Amino acid sequence: MSSRTYESRARTHPTAIGRTLLSLMAAKKTNLCVSVDITDAATILSLLDAVGPSICVAKTHIDIIPFSNSPSSIAEFTAALSALAEKHNFLIFEDRKFADIGSTVKAQYGGGVYNIAKWAHITNAHSVPGPGIVAGLKEVAEELGVTRALLMLGEMSSKGNLGGGEYLAKTLEMARGDTEFVMGFIAQCAVDTREGEDWIVMTPGVDLGRKGDGLGQQYNTPDRVVREKGCDVIIVGRGIIGAEDKVAKAEEYRKAGWEAYEKRVAE
Ligand code: BMP
Figure 1 (cartoon, helix red, strand yellow):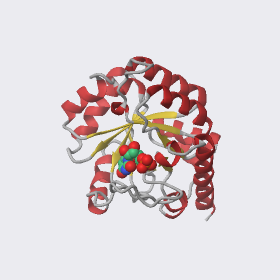
Figure 2 (figure 1 turned 30 degrees about the horizontal axis):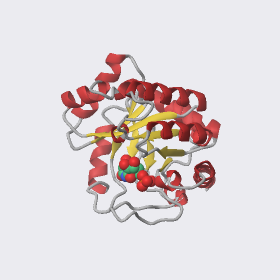
Figure 3 (figure 1 turned 135 degrees about the horizontal axis):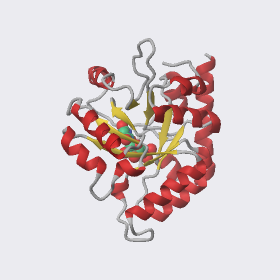
C-alpha cells in the first residue's frame, strides 16, 4: 500500500487522468466519490451541485435514468453534468463495467445512445475478455482525441464474487500492459506494486453504519478500506443519497475518508 501523499503521486502518476485526479484530491482534501444511483436526472444534477465541494469523483450509472422528465435528453444531461464537474472540480466516472470483446466495447463506449467516452473521464471494465477489451476502449479515446482512463475490476464488494486473489493478480498483469490508459482498479485492497508503479484503487462497499443491504452488498468503513487496506478513493452511494441531509452526510464521509488517509500516510 502507498504511504506516499496524493500530492506527490499527482506529480508522477503514469496516466494523465490519474495526475489530474490525485492533484484535485489533494487540493480539495477529499477522497470521496459519490455514487449517484438515482433515476431522476434533475435530482442527480441538483445533488451534485450541492455535494460538489466535498467530492473528487461523481460515479454514474447512466442506463438507470429513463429520461422521461427534464432534462429529457441524454445530451442535455451530460452537458449539465460536465458543467458541474468544471464548476466544482470533480471527475466523472461512468460505472459501465464493460465486459465484451474489443470490437464490441469500442462500439458501446464510443457510440450507442450514451456516447460514454465523450463525457466520462473514467470508465471501468472487467478483465474476463482479456487484453483486447483494454485496447478496444483505448482506441475510442484516441480516435476521439480525448484524455480518458480506465479502472479494471479486480475484486467486487459483493458477497461470493469471483474476484480477488488469483483473479486480481491476473487482472493486475493485464493492467501492466497499458499503464498510460489503465489508471488503477476497483478493488477492496491495495494491489501489489512493483518499484515505480502506482495504481489508484477505488473502493465501493463503504458505509459508516450498515454492514450489508440484503442483496449481497458488503460494507466496510472508510478507515478500514483507506487506512487498513490501502485503498485510495471511497465510493459511497446509499450512505449519502439515502440520508436526509445529503450535504452534511457527504461532508461526514469526506472527513472520515480524509482522516483515514492522513493516518495512513503518517503511519
Ligand atoms: P452503495 O454504496 O449504495 O452500496 O452503492 C455502491 C455502488 O458501487 C453501486 O453503484 C454499485 O454498482 C457499485 N459497485 C459496488 O457496489 N461494488 C463493486 O464491487 C463495484 C461497483 O461498481
